[in-house]
Amino acid sequence: MTSKPRVFSGVQPSGKLHIGNYIGALSVWAKEQDTFDGLFCVVDLHALTVPEAINPSVLNQKIWETVAIYLASGLDPKKSSIFVQSTVHEHAELAWILTCVTPLGWLERMTQFKTKASARETVGSGLLCYPALMAADILLYDTKLVPVGEDQRQHIELTRDVAIRFNNMFGPVFSLPEAMIRKVGARIMGLDDPNAKMSKSIGEIKVGHSIGVIDPPNVIAKAIKSAVTDSGSTIDTDNAAGGVRTLLTIYQAVSNASDDEMHARFNGKGYGFLKSQVIEAVCEGLRPVREETQRLMADKTYLKSVIDQGSEIASGIAEEKMALVRNALGIDFIKKLSK
Ligand code: AQP
Image (cartoon, rainbow, N blue to C red; front, side):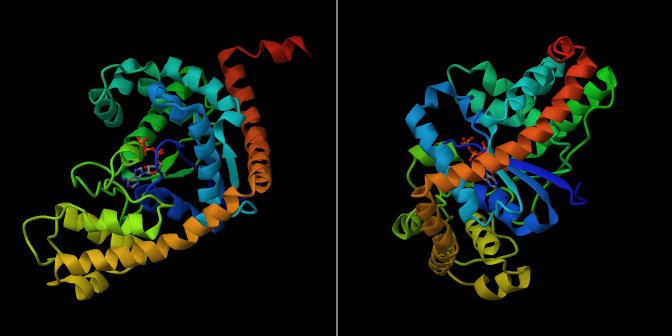
């Protein structure tokens, strides 16, 4: 038993993993891993919620690449468990059970569902039920903290509500998790649209929307040079909004500059200067991640050993929790009959 708080988080292996995912999630995991009992998962079952977007060989490649990016971002498999969601079957089993205890209205209220559903002609039920799978991911492990970007806050609140509802109906099985959200950079907006969150799926199809974590420097520079600003020309660090605020936020998150340092460096300077500084900081900050990801992608045997080790640890915890869940629901026949 460890006294460190249990932490669970994940990234979907969908689209192009971007600097928002890195700043909002991955960099926090790596920085804080010594203080966590951490489980970090590549949530491949979540990537199935938009089946029209699935290309099996691309998805398979993205799963490997996401594991490599986790490691390249600084996660250490000796300190944290890194695994792939579909290798631990309890995620899918608990997701179905939690779907059954979650009122439809709770799912329909989710902002992410409403945004994604409104952009599509047909919407699969998986997109609606996604938060129940996310609740299963978290609740399986008695997770205390969930380090995520701001966009996931509502899903963590739903997870707590689902856990409370289950506990009230069937007995105290689940502990209540809390979101862990950084102050600067928890919601990075698209470079092409300061009103839309930077997104993996949009980044995959739209040049200039995102900065990919493993994009080469020339691609990063081109995206930042073309980033939307506004009709002004000089920076007011305290009141900057829109695209200028996005660039300042990315610089501050990547460089760890304080508010005073940001003021001294940028106040009254031109947008061209800001862009050149962001290009330099981002290219330099992401260079080790890109290079290490490339190196790790050539060593699948090592990546597989990391995933196997993480899956074994995660499965051990998940099996124990599922035994309690089945017992609470009265569906533990298989075990009883085989005794
Ligand atoms: N723009 C963002 N700024 C800060 N954090 C972000 N995260 C996502 N976008 C931003 C955080 O990254 C983690 C992994 O995200 P995800 O893969 O679970 O799902 P997502 O939120 O759906 O990511 P995308 O990029 O928007 O993907 P698509 O386009 O496929 O929907 C989470 O902690 C998330 O908060």
